[in-house]
Length: 171
Image 1: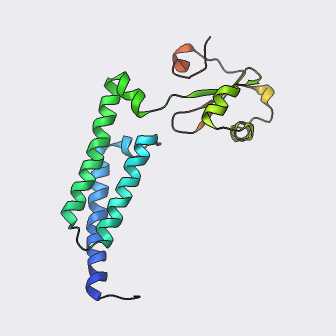
Image 2: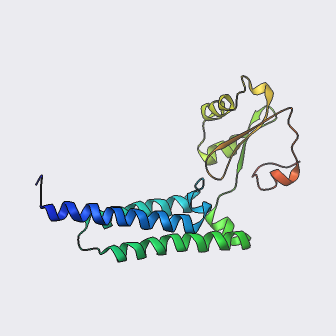
Image 3: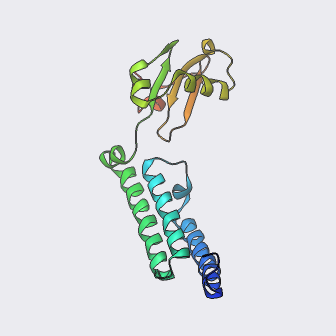
């Protein structure tokens, strides 16, 4: 129960090192997108890669090359979907969410906050994180597609190009 065999320990060490090295090589080859801030699809790929690593290490019935093939499939699909989302607005909308305007010109956008399940306290925290001591200094707070917040102060200029994908913003 506490100790199997030395073979099992040696296998985990050898396969673990090889699986880790192959994962590093594949992630480096796949580009920065694989390791960037995550949207829902990126999170699924990351969890899948972690799951494959765990299975490779602990399941003696899974050969290393099958695990590396699973890595290739997951990273390859992530690459294909990212490639398609850059070239197709429809695919991009299926894979990623749009930013949402939560606070605008001294008012909370209640319908967006309810839809995104964001409390006023979350907005206050984001405002503080950006160094503002008062909502009076804030023009807008946006919930970004990756789940992070952007806070734009009243003294900042905004242009329609940067704001065109933000749900709820119209100027």
